[in-house]
Structures are given as structure tokens and as C-alpha cells.
Image (cartoon, rainbow, N blue to C red; front, side, top):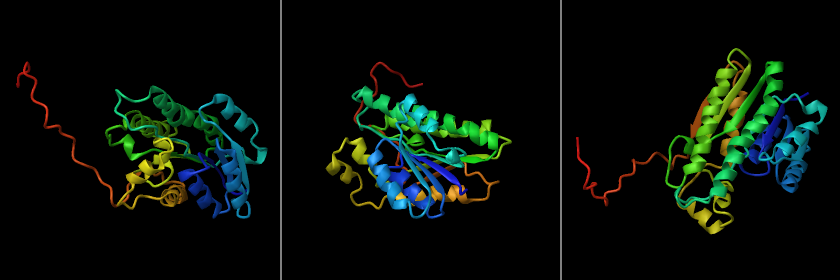
Length: 261
């Protein structure tokens, strides 16, 4: 049996590109996402290269996760690689103006959803003493920016959870990697701005951001290094992006009631 790779969020972006990259190796793919039509189209495109199982999965719903794994074909249950790619950002408003339901959706997807799927897959890896969990974090988990509030917090969680998994799995041959992409031209900004394509396009004007294929190559590479090597965290930005200076507002006068000490 070829290596079995499960990818959440496989209908678009990093997840779809990762599926295409692992298919080149002939891996058996388990593709999961909410959009079954897109998954089936991808599965049909990859069917000549490798075995593919595609099924709808909403990581925000425990019933959906339970049904997905209960209906997984027996030959595909020994998952070797889990790529937690399902995730999203919604809105760019400051915290005091943000839509709270957007915050809830990001937490349900980026945090709780990732936990649900990982918890379902990890015991089998531990029992077999073999496997690799690859989480998709973000530079936003390390470097805050205006409007990134809850999204950045969810990705900071992914980073720390990945580290905690490594601590829990010490002494076992189960690897954990957190990949943290920066500016990437996928459907990320279109989703963030709720279908406003023109606004999303402006994010990338004058830049050469990472592509989904760039990140997929990294996902594949961290899994391809020798089994005794664990890439803990890999932060990646396009060359056109770097850290900015700390924000300073120079229009505010010092508090008249305060004193320097």
C-alpha cells in the first residue's frame, strides 16, 4: 500500500496544491473539504496518478468529523500523513468593530476543527509508532498586524499546539510540523473579504506573493526528509515581504494627568 496522505481543506488553495504534489509520488490520498463538487473534480483529475478517496467534511461540526472517519474505507485508515490545511480569515476590522460571528467561525475552523481532526487521526499514528502531522499556521501567528486580531490568535494557537504535540510525542516516531506562510495568492483574501474580488486583488498589487504550489512544495519537502528529522516550524515569506517597523502614533499627546518616572 502506498503512503496514505489525508488533506483537509483540499478543495482549494494550499490543500488542493498539496494533493496534486503528493499525487506525483503515487500516494493514496484522502481528500476532505466542505465543497464536495470541487473535491470530486480534483479526485477525477488525480485518479490516473494515484488512489483517491474524496468525501465532504466540515471540521466545525463534530458529527461531520465522526461520520467522515466512520465511513473511511478500511484500507485507508492507517493514515501516514495528516495535512491540516482547512482554515480561513474573515474580516480586517479592528477588534472593537469586528463581527463576533466571524471570530467564532475562525476559532471553530482554525482551532477547534484542527483539534477534532488531529484527535481522530493521532491515536492510530501513536499505535503504529509512525506518522506525520503537518499543520498550516501563518506568519500572523508570530507578527500581529492591524485587523489580524482573532485570525492571528488562532494561528498562534496552531503554533503552540504543534509544539505541545511534539512534547507529548517525545520518544515516538511521529513527527509534527507547523508551516507558517506569509503573503500568498490563493483564495485567502477573497474569502477574508467575503467575495470582494477587487479588494482581494489590491492586496497583491505590485507584489510577487507565494503561490499555492510554492507552499505545497514545502509541505511535501518537510515530509520527505529522513524519518529521524523533524522540521518543527518553517516560516516562509515571499521575497517582497518582510517585517515592518513597530507602529507608533505621533498624533497623540501625552496624558495630561500622567507623569514620567
